[in-house]
Every structure is written in C-alpha cells, then in structure tokens.
Image (spheres, rainbow, N blue to C red):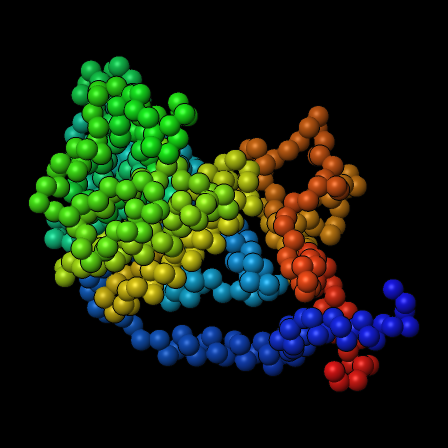
Length: 472
C-alpha cells in the first residue's frame, strides 16, 4: 500500500467500521465512563423491588458442565458472533437479580458427575457417583442396594401438586440429568433393559427408559433417545441403514406405543422430526413426546435447521403447552451437550452450545411473567478448561494467545488440563502455527473477512491516528 495514501485508507476503515465502535474505544479512556456505568449498576440494584410472591411456575435451566470458565468464554463468543469485541457482552444469564455459588461434590468423590449432581439439585439429596434418584446408601451398579433408598424429585412434587411438568434436553431423555427427574437407578448407564446386567434383572431393577413412561405422568418430553424405546432390530425412521441407531430393547416392548396407549382420551403427539414438531399446536395439545435422534441430539453447529429444532424452539413449545395449566408448571431445560463437547475436548462446540442455551433462557423469560415464575439457571459441574495467555481485547476467544510459550510455540487462549483436548505428544506440545483454531468474523464489505484480533488492531490504529485527521 502506498504510504502517501494512508489518510485515505484511514478514512476507508472509519467508514467500514461502525462509528459506535470507535466511539466506544474513546469513551473507555474516560474515567467517567466507568464511574457512570458503576452508578447505573448500583442504582438498578437499589431500585429493585423484592419479589415476595409464591411462584406458580418454576423453570430450571441446567447447563451441564457449564463452569465459570465456560460461562465467561461463552459470553465473549456471544458478543463476537454479534460483531462485538465480546468482553463487554451481557448474557441473558447475567441479567438475573440474584447470584450464588454451589458446592458440587458427591458423597464419595470430590468431583461429581451429572447423575449425582442431578439427584442433588432435583431431589435435594447428595448421593454417590453414577447413581440416579437414590440416596448415598445405594452402591454404584448394585441393584439390590437401591431398594428402599429411592428419593423423589421436584418433578414429582410438582405433579402431585396438580401442576404440569416437562423435560427438554439436548441429550437423550434417558441421560443422567433428565433421568434424575423421574427415575431411580443404581447406574446411570442402564438406559434400556439391554444395558441391565444379569444381577440387576434378577433383583428386579428396571431400566431408565421404561421408568420414563411408568413413574411419573410427564406432560412434555423433548430430546433424543429413540433407540432405547423400541425393540431390538427396530429400524430407526431417520437412519434406517445405520444398525447402531436401531432399537435396543430385548424385552420386545415398544415404549413409544405404550406411551401413546396410556394417553387414550387425551391429545397426545409423538414426533421425531421438525416438520411434525412444528405442526403440533400447543393450545390443542395435552401431551408431547418428541425424540429427534436415536441418541443425543446434534451439536448446535452441526444441526440441520430444516430437520431438527433448536433448544430455543423446543423450550418455547414446551412452555406453551405447559402454561395452559392454571395451577402452573415445572420445566427442566438442559443444555446437555455443553458437557459432552468438553468431554471430547471440543471447546468450539461447547461454547456454541452455551450460547444457544443462553438464547433459550431469553425465550423462557419472554414467554413467562416474572411475578409468577421462578426461573433458575445453574450448572452441575465444570471441566478442566482454562482461560489464559493475555489475549488482546476483542481477540477471538477460540483463537491463539499473542504470546508464545517457553518452548517457542503458540498456544490457544482456551486450554484443557486433561482429556482429548490436552495434547502432549512425546512430552511436547503440537506445533499449531499453521493451524486455524477459530472461524473468522466478517469485518469488511463485499465478503472480505478478518479475525477479530486484526479488527481490534485496526480499530486501535484508527483511534490513535484519528486525532490528527480532519473529521470524516
């Protein structure tokens, strides 16, 4: 570029970037900017009126594996997806008036799993790792030890109080988190009867899928898990050639058909695709079972919007069905694949799942009234995800630190302490100098792109030079 045309380049960049951006950068250098924001925040707290009403409705949003680091990184990503630097972004979760922290250990382990934690926050009882809806007197995987040690959940309490109840998840509906709402099991992995060991069958334990339709009359069930509901060899309606997607049950029961038979005289819909899901009229529906995948749902970034609804859409459908009950409702909404992405070391997927989860929370608030609905958002445990490296303001949260390690190799801003995401080969870190770790964000017209770190650098350049330029 001809340096003599630098002023023209600066004018071009200023015209490309919104004036709000450059204005914000200048404002942030003024101490009064921050003091004013602090006063506004304080005043909003002082003006807040305590809600002493008894909640008619309760919605519990559970971000599985969504620890503080995930929460912070997702906040930045959400802003960057909106073409902002991201750090200043306000998540829907950030707007809640009351905030607290929870201890997440289980009775037998320092670090819990989703089964033990779900039993804790849904049933009010801490228990052992891998066990669901039972007290700590139950031993992991030992069927006979769960007899007499079952504990009930808020889902049952709400149903007994005459309220409607529902479960929405991005995992299979038999997974640990939703299962603790209705099932009692010495093992979280007993999804269907095919998963029960011989000893459990001898001692008359039942699988989680069968308990889904037998234990509590659940009004809305949305998620995945079709294959645990149908007899072994039953072809999946969507993946008929994939043997791993076929039914797994060895007892010959078709739990979907049984569920439909149990709803005689009611308007009950079973759907497995978005077309049929969209056709369900909430105002004319008493019961809904929607199972969109043989197992867990697709990640948000891999989801086909034409065939699979988003967690925002499923949350909305559930609320519209449940809120017809004049006595109120209880709804559990789980962003379950945040956790699964972290287990696989896929921070990109985990953060996008968390952003989608936050959007579902916004939809829940939009559809309900604060004076009669208690909305709680929480996580059940965290992951060994760290946030490090002194990245520049506005740099892609999924990108690399501008600093290199003592081994003279770059590293990502987000890192895993163990698991698949912790890559040490022969005692050395992999060389990622030529690896793209994040998508690029659009910052020029006509399809041009640049990373958010480059964008922020250009903005800084504009700020430092604009004082010597005539007004555009």
